[in-house]
Length: 369
Image (cartoon, rainbow, N blue to C red):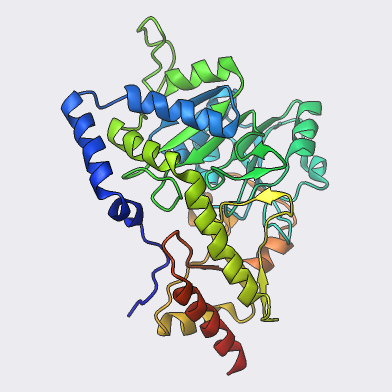
């Protein structure tokens, strides 16, 4: 029996039922359910948090990634560099464009794309790099951005997990030519079902994104390009706006929980914590460790009522769907090792101190048996 679930998706709703119900009623009574004031407020708020000029909401972050690639002009046959250690949406957006994924290894400390020597993988067909910010941490991408600019390569920032995080004043989702954020229920700020947003400083990309989410329609109401139907509802936008108003408080709770974990797990030599860079303000979207005998530990924790997750195994290049596509693989030795050790522990704003203590005691007990 699960005593401590990995996450509690209804936690924010339970804590704010009355206010949420009133806001949702106002939207329902208005009869305006798509791209009205709540959506516009959402896009303005996200642009401000990410310090970007423009934001366009979509029905999912996967769509946002796909639209970002289309907006910068990715065509079939173009090569896109990405890490093999990520969620499937990073890959699927590339495949939907008909582009060729080039899988590159990860840094063994941050678990994000290894940018040192990235130019060794550039070819005449390389058109973009998709960098994935992981676990609520933010990696400084200023050098990578300059490398991309120097080589006429687009930088797409998959910041699905990075809303509210920052690095030396640079916000999550502030580095890419286009950066994308998720409102999946697992995120600190979530929609009722799913949602996403793309942010950019380029007005041309912004205008293209606006067309893509509404069947290719331009400002004159004419369907100018092939587009899609990908819009977030006013109900979800309303729910997200309330969460955005309390984001700093939510992040503070996550940071306290993470610090408690760090204080206790740092004493266990068989455990390595994936920490943010010293100058990073993390939101701790996930609390991830590298654990010796990971599978046995996970089973032990489950038997003691603690639910955990593995992010990410299989690696992207190992997914069955790739049997139908062409792709390139480089040396992926770090990712191949880490996939067997990585483990995500429960973390959400309502996680109690006694629950964290129980999780840490259980991990310690496993290694002292």
